[in-house]
Image 1 (spheres, helix red, strand yellow):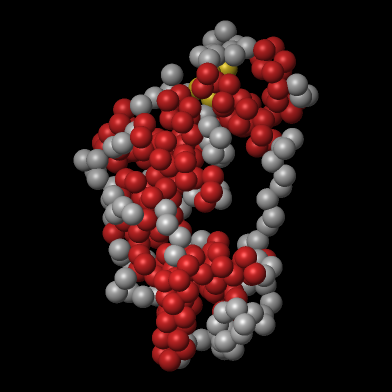
Image 2 (cartoon, one colour):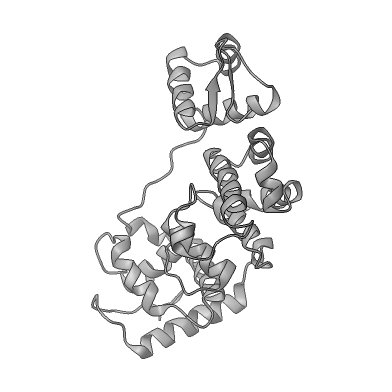
Length: 287
């Protein structure tokens, strides 16, 4: 154990039982001293956890806290979300970023109501069929909503595994990490174990360079200001406030090159977030 955390020099094969137990004990000890408190940790409602897990994709926790509460206040049940139109959903989501997630969450709610009687499914086979739900989100929903011993990776779990087991190695691929997540998993209480892992990952990042930089999946997010993401968000935000906008008005509002705006609009249309009306205006899909 070093001054900050616990590390093991291990060949990339089966872990020793005593090392697994020592690792779990250390992570739990850190968790009990430094546990973070979030509303989505105080519920086991699968709908609430579905909302939180989609919101947390590629987004800092601090930005999700208020939006999560606002979203559930507006759409307290999955039936409320399914019955809403896309403008209502996006108007709440605005400011969180990656608006396509709002659209896929909305579509998922409708599928769950229509095909699963309003109950978020627990099986990986059903969850992965929902739009916008990848394998890692499937695993997190299973663990947090159903306390199922699924195996998944997110950024803080990745940091912990790299710091603990791969600190002397070359760039690490997630397929190398998965066996360590599986072997160290507390199958009796996966929900709390994953919370503990994530919180330990946050602690590590406070005191050192992010261990996930050694991941072969690591990429630094580009600056938001002046980016295509900023323009995408501005278009969606404007269309949550008015029913439609003409091309001329949009160019005047965004004050950017027509070619760039056209490319972004075409991409939003391709993603079925917005559409072009018969008179050449733009509006949100589903209206």
